[in-house]
Image (tube, rainbow over all chains, first blue to last red; front, side, top):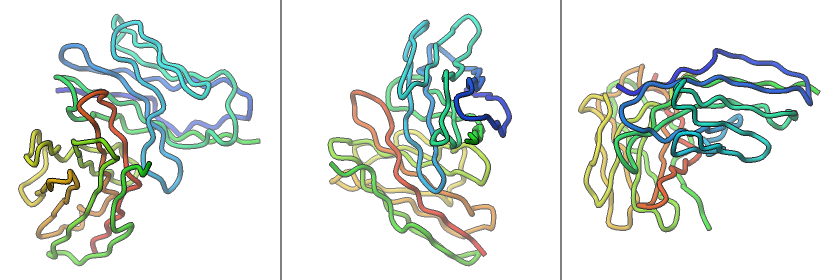
Length: 113
Length: 112
């Protein structure tokens, strides 16, 4: 079945540091890939997505590129801020539209001033 | 434009009881999915409703059931509650196109 593996946290960075959170996946067919963010006490917000190989999703300074050859979708940001502190989830859908999201376990990011 | 709303925000139940959680989708969305998020884990798919029918189901027992109403809102029912059912229950809605799922704030269920 489908699965998502993302790097174990927690990750602690200083403000303006470079961020990478690794994500790899296993899926049948050609999945769509997502990064969601969950701020403390809140639900999940879609951060970015990519629907086909070599697509780059980007939002709020975050980027991730759909790499079919390495089955990866790593999240990056060049300069993190304290407000980026949250839990980040890599996820995928496969098998057609509107089907279930399969999530990784999440990576807690803490950014210190 | 109101996003996905869920009620109640928090709920405390006793083992063996039954609970009903509610979700109203984002305007223009016709599909509702439910997820269970245990502490420190990623959300797990419970089921999805479309046109008032269960379209797909995850690996959850029959104690978990749902319903979708003609106005697209949805309920999640859990019978014979177990301590392990304590979790954050997330509702997500989506449209036929595009397919992104938008999440509500969740209902925190505690079973004692």
